[in-house]
Length: 222
Figure 1: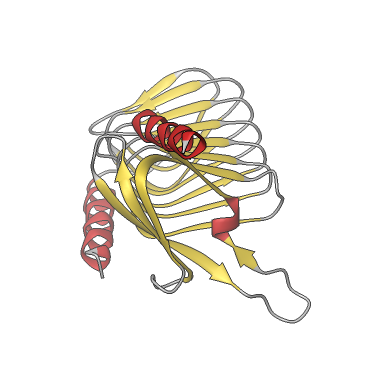
Figure 2: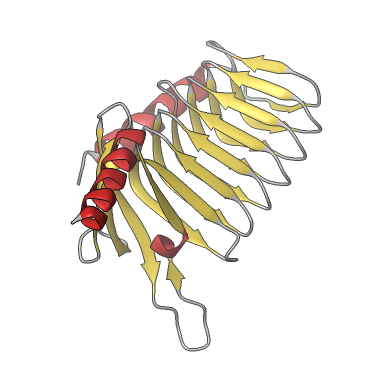
């Protein structure tokens, strides 16, 4: 299944290996900081308007961003990454995590890395420019929730995928192909359905926009 099981197994193996070799810690960043190779934490929380750069290391359980903080993750391994209360997450490089949660008016931008699943809800914003989402993308809640996907050659197959919401494929702006399973649920009686695709905005590359514009001009002239 798209190497999902292998990838997640590697992530857990790395976490367990490093977790047993060094003492775990609970840390709060109220001011700017760095998480780098050799650092091993159990729980990490970033607060106020602190900026934390994670270039390596391991967070075995949760790294959570809140308030107006900014967390830039370009390397390392995390169990789970979460954002809330107007915070910002930026993912890139060879970072790996099993799960990202984006909620409460926070913003997440993904330029690279490997993520198992992304769950976004209620007023949050997700921008996807690159990387791998090996499990699924899930969006639910208010209409203010927007997931912008930047690329080209988009195709949406309502019957594909393993999570009930279809599958979106295409190419990132650097020409790397991607395929993302979307989470969907019709909802139980009295329960709200989950339609991830309804929250997605597809943003084509400038060249594609130009071609579309030229096509419209041709149609008008004809």
